[in-house]
Image 1 (spheres, helix red, strand yellow):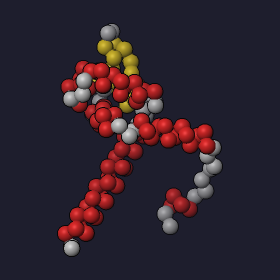
Image 2 (cartoon, rainbow, N blue to C red; image 1 turned 135 degrees about the horizontal axis):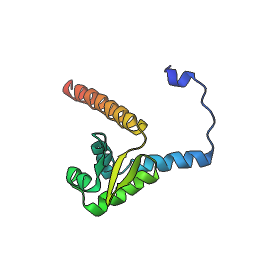
Image 3 (cartoon, rainbow, N blue to C red; image 1 turned 180 degrees about the vertical axis):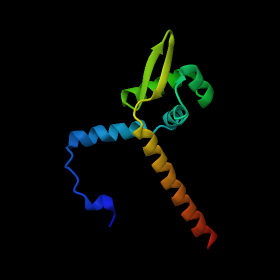
Length: 116
């Protein structure tokens, strides 16, 4: 039994679960994950995000807005330039955990396939 299953979890309302699901849906778009990965390196303006991701300016702006609305990314103005940054550092930890778990699963699958 894991430590997570031992502790008592607080009940969560249906409305709260809907908000949580909406937050996770924000991460279900690969372009948004790409933007988050680039922002892990540090603050970037929209032009730098376009260059680093290969997305169009319109797509970057739209996806950044979704990430801002979800509270994952922050944005501030410096003159005419919008500077984007990771507003919630736990998003980086979450992405790292998911990536590490996927790598473990894939490594296990490779072992299984190699043994057949």
